Image 1 (cartoon, rainbow, N blue to C red):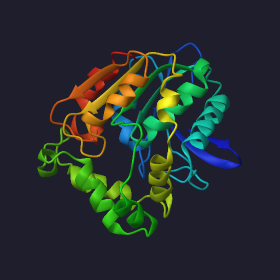
Image 2: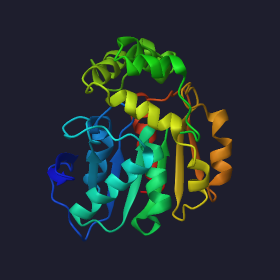
Image 3: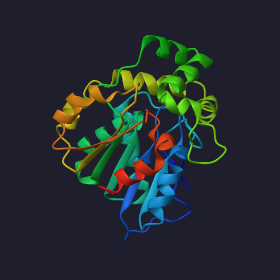
Image 4: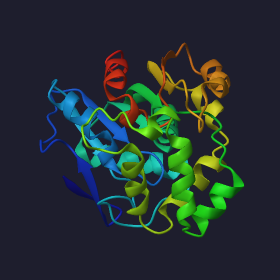
Length: 262
């Protein structure tokens, strides 16, 4: 589905269905340099279980036009415009990595619009190393290599994809490689500069689920304690053996976890 926001075309994956006001809605938000395709399995699953699903391509990503937005608050405001255009009043908001910060900011500042918040592969604050930022700024392929290496657990770099014939490392690299110039840098910079996340977490009123990978090296479980303490009684699910790219490494376990609040 394509809609127009701020005079730019925006793509939303809806499983080829119109939004039904009688059904609950779920918004899926991708991570840095990615697009809606990372949520295809989950979106299809929940669509077939009676939900409206809206997997967005952020501006300047995937099939959405326009320039990449430069901070988390602007991305959350943009998400509200998407929901307004689709006439969705309240929704569950699911975000991975960068998307989890957008989901958090949206749920805190537009509390009446969020019925549940799911943060996947998350940490607050979400610092990004100077080496990765510099490589992203220069559109250097080493940024894709570093993010792919650290984004997958060590065991999954050797294979193990549930979908036969699909190579996890290659799939991750292709997603980064097809991102538009500058998009990854703006995403990573936005993550690095988002310093009000713990304050926002304290303002979230809806049920919250955090889904983490036990082997995540980008947003390690041990670093999530401040966020867990800032949120109001979040449910925390740690998936054993998984790294940061949970949708690829542990798709079925992730679906099981999502069912707890969706």
